Structures are given as structure tokens and as C-alpha cells.
Image 1 (spheres, rainbow, N blue to C red):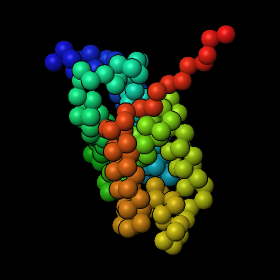
Image 2 (image 1 turned 90 degrees about the vertical axis):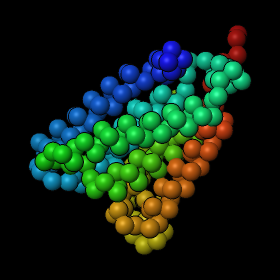
Image 3 (image 1 turned 120 degrees about the vertical axis):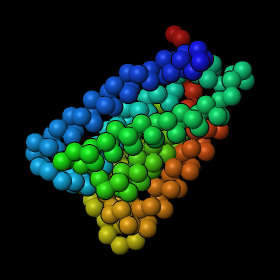
Length: 198
């Protein structure tokens, strides 16, 4: 149990969960004040998912890159559990609003967007490091919000903002979730580069 506690603290999980909860609460409050009752619009939903996922993603890397790769710990299972816990926490925060008058839904979109964006962020963490892992999800999501697509290609490129029954959107989200999970679990976050001493 002590090992789990140290792992959680080293990743600043309590801080990230507090920030994710606060972000969700603020987004819900703004949606309630300005949008009224019922399900929020797709743009508000996907931007809220992006915000919460970006906050949780800060926990994907620890303070010591070398320690994260030592053979003394079962890193693959820890990373898999970490991603599963992150997905569960984000889903719980957003789906709790289904009990209120202003809801982040439908649930299918919440699950698809959360899994896909978390997978994309994990993939970016493995390729570019935790500090830069939110760049690609942010750029892709803002592009999808600004330039909504139609047709198969459009739904594929703007999968985050599509209806819950969109097959191309579901396929892209599943692909990103699988690829991101595989890359992060097998490699972990990319090593931070430090400037050469003068």
C-alpha cells in the first residue's frame, strides 16, 4: 500500500484530481448559467472533456525519468492501471452531471471522446513527453470545433464533435485508444531532454 501511495504522490494525482474536479464544476456552472437545462452542446462537451483529460494527463510522468524505467517495478501493469484509473475518474466526473439538470452527455459521446482523447494524449506522451502531450489533442480538437466535418472523411477528421452513432468517429476513437495505450504501456513517457551545460 505504501508503494501505491508513493506512486500516486510522485505523479501529483491528488492535485490533478482536485484541478479536474474544479474544472468540471466550473464548466458545469457556466453551462448551467448560460445554456440552461438539458444536455450541453457538442462543442461545450468536447472542450470540457479536453480540459479534464489534459489536467489528468499531467500524472502520466513522474519526476525522475530514469526511475520510471527501472526493472524493479512492473511498469507495464502500473501504466495500464494508471490509464484505466484516469479514464474512470474523468468519466465519473462528467457522467455525475447526468444526475443534474445540466448534463454532459450523451453518455456515448462522453465515453468515446474521453477514451479517444486520453489515448491520443498517451500516444503523444510516449512520443513527445508528458509536458508536450496535450499539444496534439488541443490542436486536433480545436480544428474539429472550428471546422466541423460531414461525410465519412469529415466525420473521421472531426470525430470528437460527431453524433454518438457516428461509425467513423467511433473507429478513430477506438484506434487512438488502442494505439495510445499500447505505446504508453510499453514505453512510458518520453525522456525529458535537458540542455547541455555551458
